[in-house]
Length: 167
Length: 213
Image 1 (cartoon, rainbow over the protein chains, first blue to last red):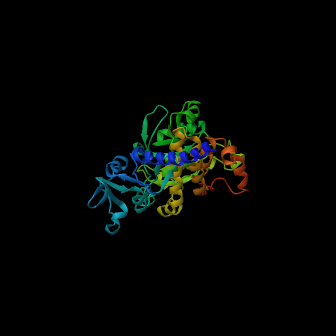
Image 2 (tube, chains in turn blue, green):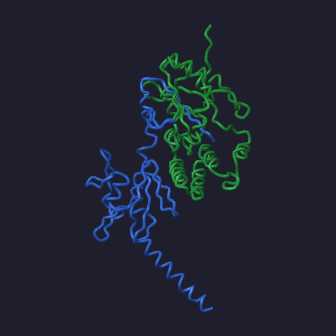
Image 3 (cartoon, chains in turn green, yellow):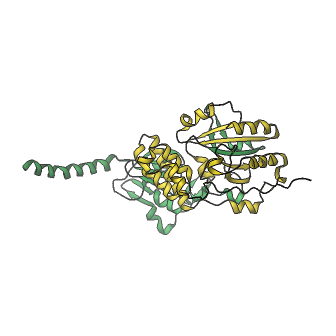
């Protein structure tokens, strides 16, 4: 009986310890445009994905500038009135809410809790734009020998693009 | 594949290329044996992320797109059988499609099979929000599978299938990586039966070719 009692006391104690340990060194994985990056997780639990500004750029190549969240010539303004929903300071570190940004740019996210993986789909600006221009979206894929070929390598010829599968 | 090779041998001198892309999560391991079966001299690529399925908003194999010399789509997604091996199952005769390709290669934009801009825009539909999320769930499932977490991938494959219910690629690929009966409670044969006479492929819309007098 006393053993059971001590076990019952021990279990929550272990759980509490585990929670703290997890918060200290927790990692989360971001897959963004096919690039896999392991980033630090904030100490506070959140349904959203918060990342440090440094990790944000490592994972997505986006940089926060006065005019918005930018990558090359592409910039998405962050609504001024809602800035606190996107940016938060904890001590010396500035964190960014990548989930909120995804909602802003209409980008779907799939999340796996067991492995802390956040998989980002295509932003709205990356989807279906070809329907306006009718220009076939480009891609680059390997042949069986690993040599890469792009659809655009075939410009100047008629191309029958056809899919198949082994399954 | 021998069928496409025959067509390619016939037309390759006429500024025409075939790019055949395997939609296989297993990559070269799964697609390779099929490619090695016979010598092929058209371009065969391996797409272990199902990228072409995603960016062209496809739901099936074999699906083809015709792309002209300027890189413009002139016929969008449609079923593209090169022979009648599975005709008993889907009822689609390959011959009219191969003749359509020959006509396009010979006549270019004057071909009756090249669609007008208006018709193209009517046939091309943007990905719905559900499809875009399905693509992300499928991508996450493939990531977990590749990392050796096959069991944890299953709920995400299922979510992709739920969000994009007409997408046979997302069903059949997931089933092929698993014991479909055990993990998904179904299999390809059962799902085809559920169609209950509805076509597996969206029917082809080839124009009738007028016979010359």
